Length: 398
Ligand SMILES: Cc1ncc(COP(=O)(O)O)c(C=O)c1O
Image (cartoon, rainbow, N blue to C red; front, side, top):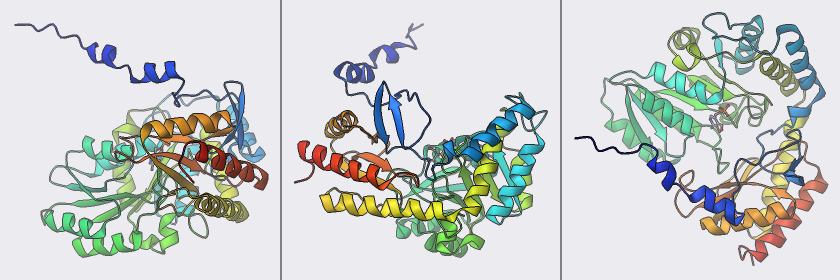
């Protein structure tokens, strides 16, 4: 007997976003009508941008912009094909060589987005009988990559090394094991203890992959990321990165031993069955990489700004969780209070990201703030003034 259930019934029943919009509390999909910079215009309203992952401020750097424009002139707007077939430009190869050199790996492979990099890499490597072991706070693309694989997916409590060891112990001895962690956690700005993770991996015969989307360009003396910060680059098997943050572009990379990259290159469906990074995006990463290598002062300034804000927010009495980096959460807890605070901050000229469950644990709604090397002291002082005023009005600080 046919039930005649309407597939779209769930869409009709989904009213949360429409209700929030009607009440003026909808913080998502806001159109920015200027370049992503320290200040932007949103719906005609000039705001200080404290929600971008443009950590080094390179999206408007003249050399990055010029490189992208030049690439369009030479290669046109798109490769119109997969890396596997007609879509590999000499520019892609150059970027892979440069990234392998930068990350001190034998080989690197670029994908069209960071999300696709995790999907393709994890699902290619983890087969039947293998296990992916993932921190509970890992990015959604790691979770989806694991789900897409034919292996088993096991999780350990966030940054809990005792729990990781327990999960490793419980894995069948004959299973191939891949531990995957974010290097720098994108919502709370804390780090994975890679020094301890690599020791456990060695003890239990597991491979380690670090998603350093937020760590590359930011962490380590040379910007090589969280593994450089912990001094364990040689112990990490695979480094994954995105270009949508410090590299001021779009795309992703996986880097490691040549034979492993060769395998991923021939098995990662999200790369093989998708068009390659457009020329402008590749050229922008190449230019950004050169700046990252040659101008360490940008990273120093980023950290100066981050320290100023972490200190300032803490002094005002905000709960900044366990942040150790330029990603600094303001933990609010209650979802409605977080939305109220976001709205008032926006009206006062400060844009932040609101992060609600399920992206964070229940009762841990937060405002995610992130800082750029190009924020000025004056802008950051203004932000602290606004945070103080709005935080008091919302009853979040005394
Ligand atoms: C930790 C992490 N991994 C992967 C991604 C996906 O990267 P992309 O935006 O380049 O697809 C992101 C971006 O949000 C991220 O934060």
